[in-house]
Length: 170
Image (cartoon, one colour):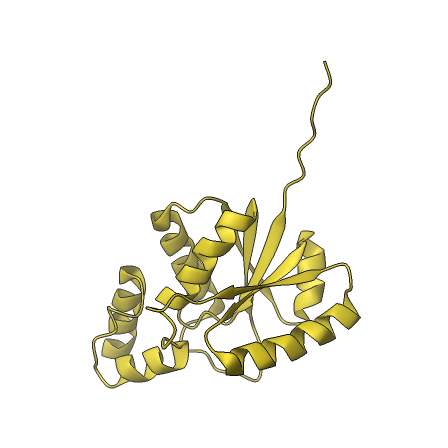
C-alpha cells in the first residue's frame, strides 16, 4: 500500500487589521476555500499608532475566525518587515490580496511585481471584494466609530463591541 503525503498549502493574508472589517472577513473566507492554512499576518510598524494593539487585533481576529467556522486552519502572526519574508517564514505559497476597485488593482499589481522580484517563489492571489463589502475600509470604520456612529453593518459583532468599548474609554 502506497501512502499519500499531502502538502499543506499556506496563504499569507497581510494587513494592519485595525480593525478587522467585514471586507477582511470576506477575503479571509475566500482564501480559506483556496488554501489549507491561512496565516493572518498583522503588520506592526513602530512609526504608526494603531487604535488597537497588535495583541488586541490578534485576539479579535482569532475570535472572529473561530466564530466564522472557516474551511481552513487560520493562525495569526505579527511582522515588522517585508511581507515576502513573513511568507517565507511560514512556508506560504502565496500572498493573499483583496481588491475593491481599479485603484486597488493598479497598486496591488505594482506591489505584486516588486514582491515577485524579491521572492519569485511566492505568488500573489488577488481576491475580489464582494459587492456588499467594497466600500468598507478600516479607516472609515474607525472614523465612524470615533464620531459615535453605528459600525455594526461594516464589522463583525465582536469588533463593533470592541470599538464601542475603545471609544467609551477615550
